[in-house]
Image 1 (cartoon, rainbow, N blue to C red):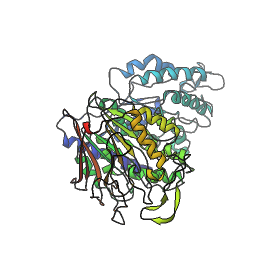
Image 2 (image 1 turned 90 degrees about the horizontal axis):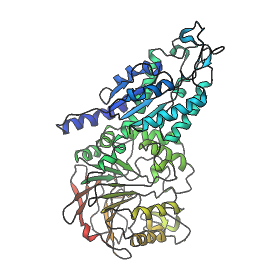
Image 3 (image 1 turned 180 degrees about the horizontal axis):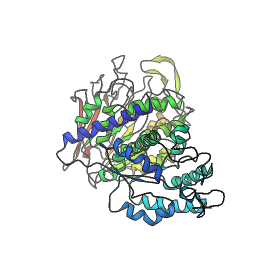
Image 4 (image 1 turned 90 degrees about the vertical axis):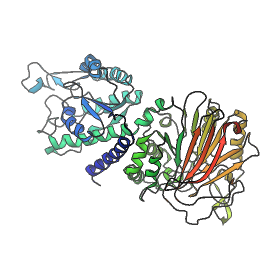
Length: 556
């Protein structure tokens, strides 16, 4: 698709959830508020951004031309006012790096030969640091726009200074964990006829519109993470409706997302094989994520409530892959970008995508623990023959791992965190018997280590959810654990299992398995003895498997 078509598809993906929300609520719908701060370049693209995002956000520009960082320091408080901004997209630079001479007859007194620079680079970096710190206090999602290109022949600006000032800005943004919109890279691709004149930093309408499309995309990406960014607000309220699932073929219809949206979830968990990437080519992997992101049902579901995600092998990048996947570092970045992790996310500062969050007040807390069973997992051992589920056989090698040392240490700390219920998401089944497929049973020492860790930490209320198998089932184990431990598997969102029958599993708690499209639903009743009901629901939202657990049953 062309850039414009991709942009329009992205807008459509946001329009649908907003219209659904409006239909489902009698309350007045308020659009998120977006502030643009910048010089005449931003004044040129602002009208286009306002129009592009009109159905989705209230977009305003700071009063007048924001000029240089010195002006910013003087006026930033008045620009921010008393508004609660959701997103702030900001830039200073072209004025700062401009040379001016009071004797010059050129417009703006520009003169890079005899003039003095407005803001020296070191001062610029210091000013920008102060401004970014001030903006961060708003708690808005911040987006820094790199300064656009300085063309040859510009009267008051030197070619290459834009890159020097952007490098300084990048250091500041990295320090504060702010995402960057690289408008400099974009404008370096512009043809001469997109500029207002040779040697002029300004753009004609088509150029401003192109800038607006990229600015709007970045703002949409920030708004896409807004449910997650505001998850701290959600954590104050006890969760009662959680949905989860896995295994999405990004190039096939996904009607199940509309069914899930109708359940009015308070939290959605995407626990693996969210796309089928299966490639070493990161441009291909990203394109497949983009295809999922452009699906209106998926976008509507994500916009309706906070969402959390981990990966399995196919969105990791290789079938049955582990720590030997050569693109795991690059794949992690693409994963985090797609799921909207902010620049200061812990997952951007360490290998692996494991994560944890606690929702709800004391006495009604739900902890979500997302494991990464891919990034650190040691190579599996092939058995002497192919079995029903695949080629893999148990391996008792004490040096092999599922989670890796750092994740194991982190998990122990998480299990000590106060919570009533704990939902542990594992992209592969933890309890099921090995029958050739991928499962924790392939590395039995690691599986036993997990059980022992539950005993050591005295973690109450643990329930495992898993995916991968393209069917749904419930497993249970009673030996070696501090209380009955359940593993509820939901898979797949939009694929039918080819064989139609499950692998052998002596830990199956119910003889019933479900082999059509499905998702998992967790309902919590916070009565005197809180209870959690686990369900597998089909394409119509009808329950196919059900298990209710009382918190009193899940105590060490």
